[in-house]
Length: 231
Length: 220
Image 1 (tube, one colour):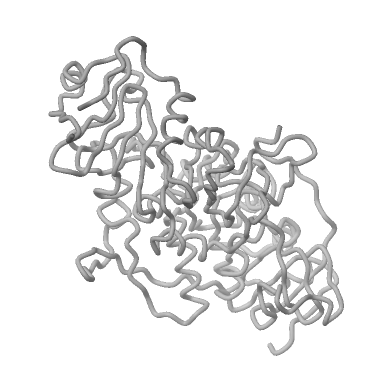
Image 2 (image 1 turned 30 degrees about the horizontal axis):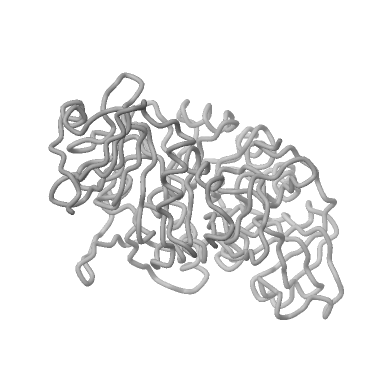
């Protein structure tokens, strides 16, 4: 797909996501979570999905709602268990959901590798731990490393702050988190943003995700949600 | 010689945070783990120029946000709303962990279930069969920072020591911890013997008995 498509609605933006797809979902907790795209994906109906995300949902919104709707076969994440991850907890403990726990840095780097065309890489993270089981290891200059393979997505659903009409993206504060890495690691990247500005309105020095990584963009209304731990 | 403070009881977690803060070098880049270690930030004077890293993509993290400061797009690794300080920067997750793994971070302070005399760390999984595994950034942090400190109570609720000969809980990292800060004492681990630098409310000899570990005093 040469040009980024500007979509009218989140439903159009997630059209065509097939059953059995691997979907990378941005966000760290609720910051940077593409709520509108996930809600649209629930309406769209794709099932048997593998979801790659840092967490496995909070409360009953976003990722938790997708899990609750029974559309997910497997979750690949670093930290599923949270104070309000009861939807995930129940599905996992009842054996209805497969889980692959990946250390957060390896999760990010494995997606980065996928986006950068790297076949595999050696990481020192998790050496000597239960998460090293079954992994090839190698000593390089006296230090042990584990062989880690890329995680490629069929789709990435991410949330950015602003896009221009070409699909260049800028983010806001720590809501950036996995967005740029996932955008590069998926065959089709779909971004929800607060606003779309004319081409040329973004400072090229400030663009974080260049349009080459972005396939579809949809502007959505800002959503207010309760922040965990807010006081 | 070990400094023994026998005229008082063990430290509170706030006092312990203050002790750790005194050992954070001026101008260093520091990651404070979720939970108790976040208290250390309250004891770092601004003139020390310590820059706090949070693995969800920020350097220059400020104190917890209050009232109107709360911004859903700005949280720490514990997902608690925080603020930004002048000179802060944001970056994506792969860069954030490259900073760690690449040896750019000076100090990381983590909580722990157990630390072994050789510096092994267990802080991610109780090993209970019904526990949901969740590792987050713990394993990356454990092997990434130049110095990994642990902040914890020395004894569990049942009185069992958390500084041990060998961890019985699943490991987070091998030989990665250099110093263990606890309510009863500060220990250097990972060397030929565990060195006790300072104690509170208990002498070295009794501490050795309770831990069941040979303890030595610092040189000089």
